[in-house]
Length: 313
Image (cartoon, rainbow, N blue to C red; front, side):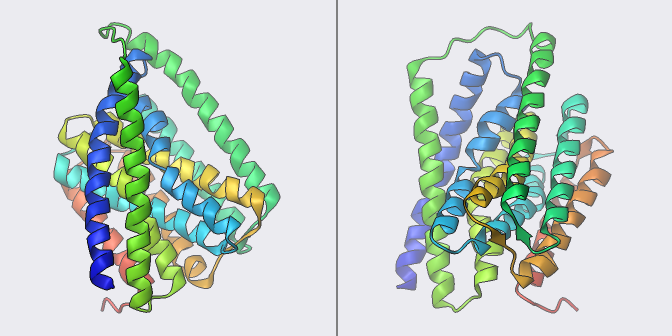
């Protein structure tokens, strides 16, 4: 049975990567047609689009009576986004220069969202009121981002006009479906394999499910970096991370209270805060180098080791 699920994993991963290619190409065209900046293509279109697997799996968990997977999934996904996705994008695709105006706002928004999230999680539960505050915070973030787009549109007004075609919309939809379906079956396969290997639920949520649902961000960001679109890679990761903290937790939290298990509370939550602090430190250089990318990947390996309870000494 494990062999079957390994085959499912490989096929689903291949579909996910191909979907990332289609989504990236069509999103660029649609963004240009709408006069969106490259950064906002990554933040709004790709950042939110590639977070759909996290949102769907979290809502599904709440409705199926296992709400404890929501916070573990979000925390694990965001740690994977910052350390693994950005790390892999810079390590494999080259150094990433941060756009001064947009990076400052989005880094601030991510840090604020993380701080708010950590404070809400201190009592080991996310209540209805807290979930509502998260959703309202997301609405505020989205509104400010769209206003920023108007400024960027004026700055980039000299770009050539592009008119989207019906095939662009079709390719975008197919790419997004491939991402979501591929991520879903990657998650299903890893869950089945992990169950057969008798791995704890908290590890499934914060490591396997979180890693599986972060694969769309990983695929899109690495592809974007390799094609020289650093703004899209950066916007995708930060937009997705903010989306996770505010909406992927907020919407399920409106359905039911979200408890936080001991392992997520003791390991995942502090790790999330540390990653946010490191993001502030690194962002002052306005550039992510290959060495920083490699160190980020190693940091993610440390997080995984701690979740599995390995002794690194």
